[in-house]
Image (cartoon, rainbow, N blue to C red; front, side, top):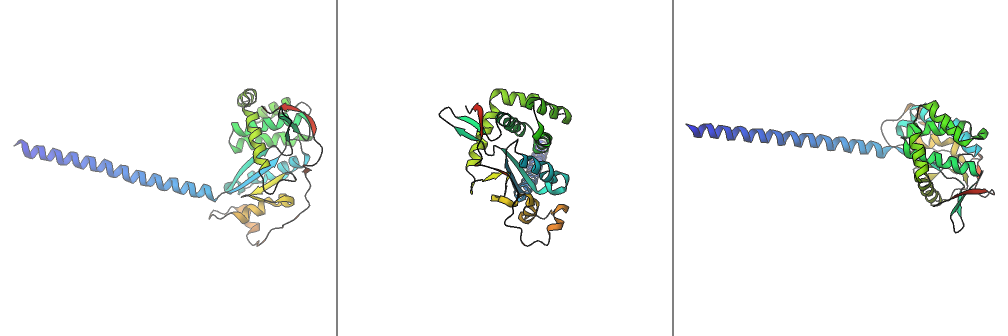
Length: 256
């Protein structure tokens, strides 16, 4: 009498184990498919890199009046925005002193921008940078300016303070310096906009047309509707910028 019961128990246990394994396999397959879909969607995004410096009036104008359109429209859905606050700064001498085109305040604010980029996702750090660039040409007290922006936006000042005081901001700045120096072709001025590795050079204000043209996904944003019939974009333009050969105002801070 015990054997049939034991066999039934074993069959039930086998069925239970099989069900668990089947559920795990199906769930894992769905998870892998979801991950693959997410990776594909991310890979389809267009990388828009902005190489700039915090107190260049042309950079400020571009960020405040042009680049903001990424977030004021649905263009952000296909853009991977990368901000690189180094611009025309240089590392000089055996003590690796950083010099910035617009002096000490720019060196400080470049580092604050770098800390914001390190601390917050793009939606938050762009709003913070936008706030500072809105008043870039009239900033007198740089620390007061960024602290006011953080208060106005409801962002904690703690991660910025920690980043700056621990040297993480300086480390980021040096990484941005290396990235900027490795540009091909080398940047001649800022703002210097690169779309999927292609420098727009003097046509940087037309960046949205290049983004839409470069996008290869199916989820075309409404912001690209005006470029749907575009077969080419302008190759040259005379948009102004802060040129790299302009003499820099020394100061600064040792790089390490």
